[in-house]
Length: 342
Ligand code: ZN
Image (cartoon, rainbow, N blue to C red; front, side, top):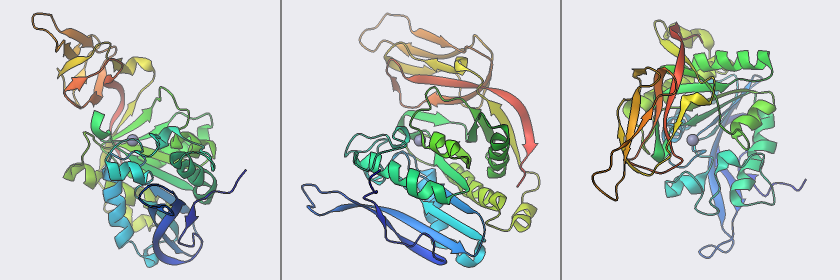
């Protein structure tokens, strides 16, 4: 396969703290010999595991970029055993535009894996992660939130994997992240996900959904920051015993999305009335939302009912809904308030 056009301005294998870029040549009207410059920090000291921390896979999700920018500017090589590679904003063009997908090529990075070195800008970014960063990593944490069109209760997530021992390692890392909720997540379509690329490579992988609505809150950023440190301590890059001492009494509630009945999809476009809020317990058959026809008065609203009982874990965010949008996700509660374990 052709070599990646992306060149790092840092040495991924050198000791110390390095701040630089993944430089992707991108010729365009306002810069003939220009480049997309994706910020990267590498912090390495001696032998040990390598952890890859990523945010901004989607450009309108902010907890990852905030927590990882802060980490990159404060973590020192003397703090770590092994290596931490920090990319706060994977899809930098999308992040600059404040949109989920790239304004350059409409690419959704998290549907573009394994990518192509001769493809679009977004496919070139995916290919670089696939072939150059993933092979270096033992642990990968990819921080997401709901973006402009979804909102979530804050959770770290893993997938059900064919390899039970790999899944167990991912579950342990998810518990160490220590979000208020921990989810066994069902993807409606896992083709092209960064998640799938990392899992297929046999790595320990944890993703998150920490809120949404196209912004971050003090609470959701705090969950991300604490989660990053818990994940690094679990991996052994930060001192596990020191970190675990401060973690007494912290708990997480384990959730599961066992099948497609967790999802409620809108079959109408219109004005959305959410009838239940995130984190509430609902029963199967409960009205979760109503959709009103905005083009006329006098027509009854369409009701959307829960297809199963459980905890309302996700909802559509803006006030208007389109046909095909996910209105709500109801998850099973597997176990409440289990101790966070580093
Ligand atoms: Zn996302």
